[in-house]
Image (cartoon, rainbow, N blue to C red; front, side, top):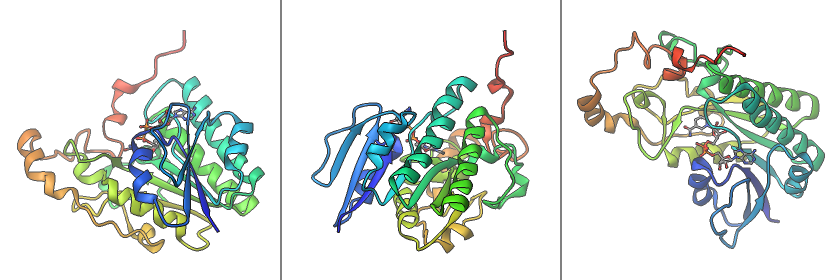
Length: 269
Ligand SMILES: NC(=O)c1ccc[n+]([C@@H]2O[C@H](COP(=O)([O-])OP(=O)(O)OC[C@H]3O[C@@H](n4cnc5c(N)ncnc54)[C@H](O)[C@@H]3O)[C@@H](O)[C@H]2O)c1
């Protein structure tokens, strides 16, 4: 039997990284985005659609064994935009899973759900209470709450991956702590797809970084075994930017520069 995995936001950075890394014999990836997606392989299907369009999502989820939900705004924006796309979109994804009988949803959460946690709390647990640093962070908190609701009320396996910084390479000294390599991202999502009976779970999505701020224990317990470490980039980044000063932003708090007053929302007019 073919396993079918729906990926929302599949045209984005992480979706593009995941496509080759989640390819498996007997697995079809159904790729959904509101932007055009690159040419599908023989084991891929593409769907042009919006995560806020519930009927379209229910149709896209039909026959799927899991949904990997990446689609939405991947940074700070206005409350109207964040609530309309990230919060309403994540609600629609869980509701589509329920309507279409999809047993598992993997939600791309973020370190910004706990951005105002001081880094002196490291290693930060994935059960650390919420401290969102932005409206974007609030949308990740809301997504984790929806995951908990749909796991407890409807029995959907719902895994929240609090991703640090998923890029090809760390590009600043904060990422020496928060980097998630593309290969480890693939390992993380594969573990989330295959771990048996997780129920509701929240785990950190970072590589095995020497300077990690986050507790990888609960993720390892689900089978996530990260292999990369940002430390090999440390000499070059520190030569360029200096040693991280852990008492000031972007190093003093988990969310880095997202905690800066520069991201204060404008007062309503
Ligand atoms: N990259 C990171 O370091 C990082 C860190 C933490 C969390 N995340 C989360 O992971 C997910 C993917 O991040 P990314 O870096 O690939 O972001 P990205 O911006 O590259 O990709 C997001 C994708 O979502 C699509 N999208 C946006 N609104 C949509 C809508 N209404 N309907 C359908 N598709 C829509 C975009 O077209 C885009 O292809 C996001 O939810 C982001 O918040 C990413």
